[in-house]
Length: 155
Image (cartoon, rainbow, N blue to C red; front, side):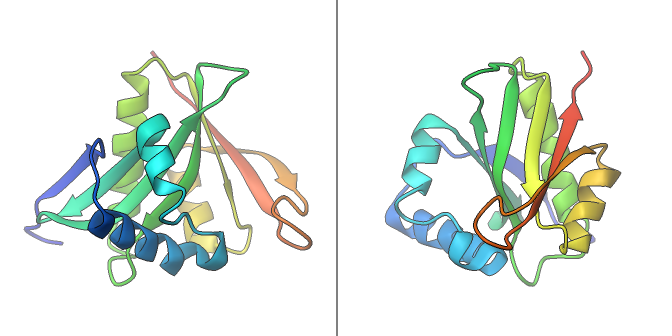
């Protein structure tokens, strides 16, 4: 990562090749809970999907929706760094870029859930300033617990 050019961009157009690549990155992180060719087009058109690119190649993805009951709240549905690229500080760069982008769009709070056993992810969110709000037992099915984290954006 020494001299790599790192960029973050929002996806506004897509083709089947991009959707397949994003689906593979998500599957590497979330297995059967990953977004896929059915859900990515919806999120690209009606939510927000951000790419982290390293020297022009996709090395991370984040999927975001807004909350219907609180228009100043955004929820990170998925956040994944490509296998082989993890442990290089790229997750922090993507998360920081997303926070800046959401701040510029009037968002005041960002929430996400994370597997309590995913120590690396929990550490990343805490390092970025997210605070744990709750433990959600069986959030995604029996014995699929999550921690709910929130980040409050300053003006």
